[in-house]
Image (tube, rainbow, N blue to C red; front, side, top):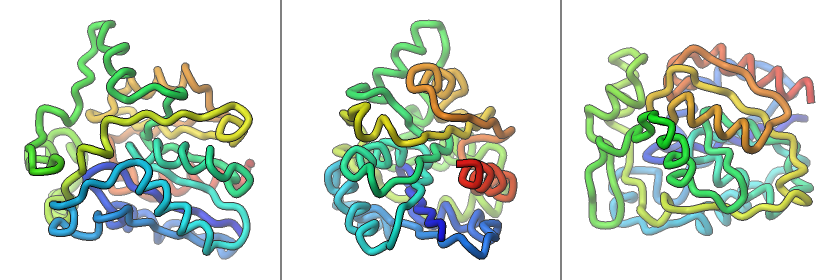
Length: 245
């Protein structure tokens, strides 16, 4: 039995994986969608001050209820959580698939990576200009959903995102994960590039691949949310990576 555990990124929750799930067709595969702490509703997220430790503990508790090894499928900022979990319990993790995800070197933050890429004259601001401050975090303005996250999506998908996106706590954003070659470093890693991503722009994704060197990589012609825009194609790549491993 193959267990796939889906970890969402910032400002999202489990709803973002729903369009993908009907395409996970293997009878020998079970999927588990995680909602990170306080992401279940906008109201719950408003007061959240959760950080990487709370997120990691939440995922570890979920994995403890699953028999056998698991694959972590991590979108965007969920990649940091997947790496942290792999460092904690490497024997449980069969592999990590980063979907336009933050696959960073040990100790490096995403902002540091973006600064490095920006020195080449590339705009790496992504969603940042479209954020609105709340008491403990930020939320994404509608323009950011339309122009950065889902510029290639249907109007229906944009409306779903507007209704479901939550506040992202500041404590969870300015972080880095320290990992070792002996633990998280030995886990097979796969990267799915979103070629037209305006959030984690292509040059940023390519730099992560250069720095961390995954086992394999694939490229999809889409923006930041392939699981919403081209779910069947994404499912095919995920299942190919899993079956090859």
